[in-house]
Structures are given as structure tokens and as C-alpha cells.
Length: 287
Image (tube, rainbow, N blue to C red; front, side, top):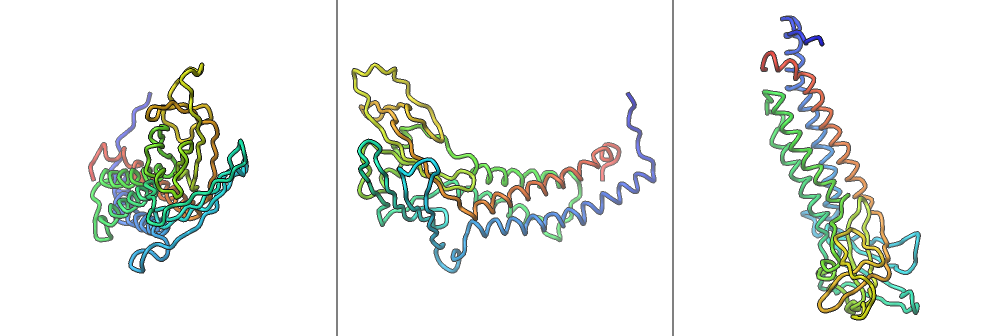
């Protein structure tokens, strides 16, 4: 197998000049691009009407599903919090219509949106610390910065694309169950979360397993969405999910943010790849 030959003096001079241009010019051009893109992403999270102008504007999202009309409703999003909820549930057994809404004094914080926004802010902070006047000395320094920025962007994206897996007792213990008026019946559980660019509401209907039930009781583990037949213990009762209703609505600005994350991650990776082209040169002479 042939071994790589060390570059000649002329080749080293050319490589050094190209590398100098990359560190002094192209790196900062890419950083400016990243700053502009992430500023746009950040604006999507703050929304018009937020910041110095006052509280974030309210946006109403009509919930729907192609598979069922058992649940209908409207969720009102204000920044990273649900400020209002209005939900109608048609009970499958008797077609009884239940209506419940948020108490006026309550809001429900969507931690996924808040965390994603914080990660974007951290990525912008990292970039702002390397302004035009900063001179990168080594490729390793650029790679370290890109890795740090990519870590924040990956975490921001993952918070939106990967909802938390919760057990049914965790959902039952959630403060969300106490947000509604009238109070939710004891045989209902609700969960709200972000999945990609969608605001999702899940309603679980439960029935109590009798002590003499012949069913083999197996408590369900954590899941984003539990299926009918999932069992759990709550207090002194053993319960089983009888029906699951999931409705959702697209949040357009979250879709924008996910696109910005993808473009930014691609820019970071492209810059890393360009830096890595010079890795063979570094092994002969540090810059």
C-alpha cells in the first residue's frame, strides 16, 4: 500500500495560503450566514408582539384528525405557553358530549418550545463571541466552535422532534390534569406536546379493572402515545386505557425553525469538511 508523500515546499506554500484565506475570510463569511439564519429562527420563537412591545401574541390552533371526530377543540398558544384550551369530547359509548376548558388563571408552559429557544440563544451566543475582529489561528479552533454550535442546534431540533416518553401515572400526576374547568372526570387523562411542527393533544379514556379481573396486569412503561389496553396503577386502583383520541394542528413557525436548524447544521458540517481537507497538511506543519 502506497504511503502519502510529504508536500513539496511549493505545495506547502499554496496550502498555507489557501488555509490562511479559509481561516481569515471564509470562516467569518460562514459565521455571518449562521448568525443571520439563527436570528431568523430566534424571531420565530419570540413571535411578533413579544419582547419590548409587550406579551407575545396569541395564536389559535384548531385541532383535528383524519381518523376521528370524537375530539374537537382549539388550543391558544402564546409564545411558549398554552394560554387557553377549549375541548369537546364525544364519549364513544353513549355519545355524551363533554366540554372542558382551561381555568382563566392558568397557563401551561410547553417546555419543549422553551428549551429549543434556549438552545438557539446559546448557539447565537457562541457565534457572537467570534465576531469579525476575532482571528482564528488553527483549524482545530474552528472545529471546536462548529461542534459546540452543532450540539446546541441538534439539541434544539431534538426537543421538537422527540417528545418526552411518559408513563401513564406520570401523565395522571401532571399539573395539566388540574388546569381544566370543570375538573376532568376521573376516567380521563390528557397530554399536550410538540411533535416536529405539530401541537398535539391526546385524550385517554380509562376504565377500572375489577379486583377479580382475569386479565394479567402488566403496567405499561413510558411512551409518547399509549395504546388501548395499556394498564397502570393509580392510588389504590388498577386502570386500563379503553380509548385513545389524538388530535393535532400544524404550527407554521415551528416548521420554519426546523428548516433553519437543518440549513444551519449543513453549513456547519460543510465548513468542518473544508477544514478537514487540510488535516494531512497539519500532520507535516502546524499553521
